[in-house]
Length: 318
Image 1 (cartoon, one colour):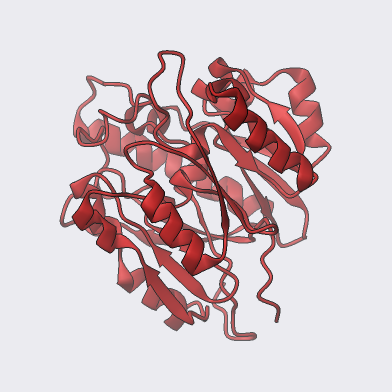
Image 2 (tube, rainbow, N blue to C red; image 1 turned 180 degrees about the vertical axis):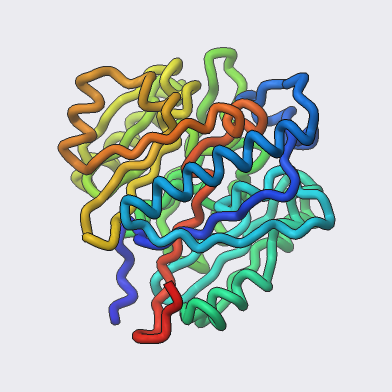
């Protein structure tokens, strides 16, 4: 068993919501959230419907989906996005992250980590808990804030109210990642809240909205880093980024064939040429999650926390 990380996982953690609505504590920094007149009950019903269809589609492709139900109390409107509070690594490390919205901090659940060990026979060698940075008002929201090139140990991060340099430095030292930090803004020059809405790193490709990085020196630094690591660059427009086309994730399946997961809205925004370039890398799986995207301002990548933990052989209840 090697602890060298692949760029793609075959297992993902997903959280079935018991509560779902537009979180007022995240709306100020997340301009992708759209206000809705739908009742809270209707918002949850629609999110659950989209969640179930998404998990079914992943399983049909051969991805192992490990689902947990959100706890009823306290209400957690964004629990459907576990990638913001936890990341799992091939050496058995689990990282817990500091989160800006107070009502999101209860999403960090040690019982889930315990069940991954006890029921699913994953091995956890240590837990790196960065949540203490919340006391200083500094945050790093998991693989929302970080887009990880796991093979080359590079973490890309756009600075925002949810992504602070001192926490990036802490992550870098503890996890042995080189940080490539930059500023990124939307069409109104407002900072983009999470790095994973403007870029995705696959095994041999990267999808990125370079136009969202206004400083040419910073943009060149990011693109030169991709070139050094041999990634083919697929550039997005601002409109495509706003359609969540940057919020993709490459996964591998039981048949070892890779898929690139994105929302239907994201795929619909791509050109034929972009789709062809991506399809040369892996099969595209697109799922309709319009309600989740509109209400919460996040998309498919945010709904999946990839599990890279080593696993004991022969004991898995798949």
